[in-house]
Image 1 (cartoon, rainbow, N blue to C red):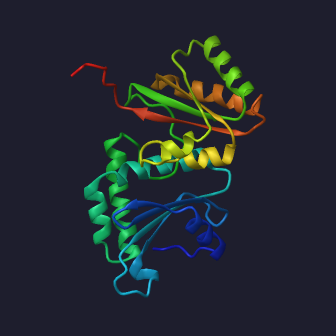
Image 2: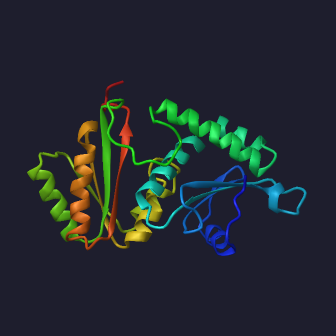
Image 3: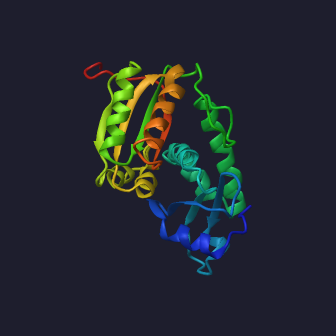
Length: 239
């Protein structure tokens, strides 16, 4: 079902819409209009009077202050929308309600494929189903980055990568991928830097806590961090 949303929320979603091609559009908004993650699905036939209109609009809605969960859901939805068969099934749905049913099914399949516990919005703790996780922290200012790297050294976290935040959010978000949520993260943090580190899955909560310390300390409380499951690696030249 398409939720009843305030006009201001719809207008904000329209401002943030990203065309994905083939008539599919995606938007994401943090709003007090919802209490938990909600994916609103709209078909042209729901709201467009033009008989030839054929488009699909998905809006990811999250409560205010739920940046990390919002980014996680964007990554989850992005993975589903990269599958041409999933896009075809969504486009064949005849109404927003049918789109919602189809989307719920494909998200559930993707969750099982990635050893997630379901499609409910939860803070996922480290599990033994994956060997490694990539911790991503978007930090404001050089001092926060320096503190996080110092904490990494003190806690034996190796191989961190730093990316200058200027323009990088738009660059990474230009392609629908695991980094699809970067645009929003950079807008919410402002001029910033990204620190990424691949760690054993059982250590990801510990490393996320180090990022939280850097964000709430020298970062002045501005920043966001999350972790992404990694199924494995392909070594250069490995064939």
